[in-house]
Image (cartoon, rainbow, N blue to C red):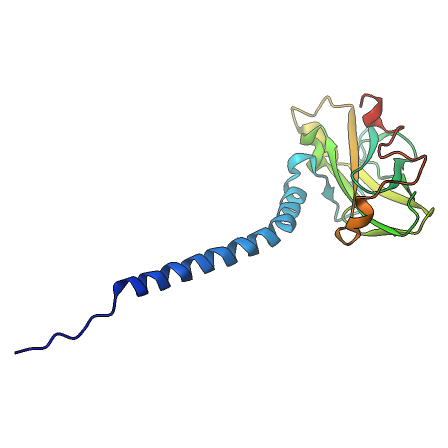
Length: 210
């Protein structure tokens, strides 16, 4: 007469498997969340998606066309108590010519504030052909109370833009920056700016219908 060996309850094994799968999924989701922003940034910079400009590997286009294009400059703030604006609202240059524009930021708060700028261009299809050689974007910038900083941008428009059917007749490109507070300055970002200042920029292209 044979004696059957007692079987372990199947429920315990199933519960352990489910718990392990859930833990792995949860860990993976956390990793994806942390990776999402830098991956999206790299994707946009590589493809020009959403009007993201390109980071140029060389300072010059290699050729300059006998055709001009105008670049308009826009500045916005999102929770940072600064005045942030372009020094000049537009610039006309030849396609392929390397030029430098300037933005200016002033801290209107009564203590140091750190900000970081994101950017895009319009029309969005022009993103891959707008090449920045030097830029202050995605760089943490700290300003003392009342301090003003000059923020240059060196760029050129790739001559290949004229070979794109949708862009061959484009005469104006808008370069837009938005300045955000850096995470460590959350209490500052939620505070009101110094008296007599505004959270909007009054003399940029965005507020002039552009």
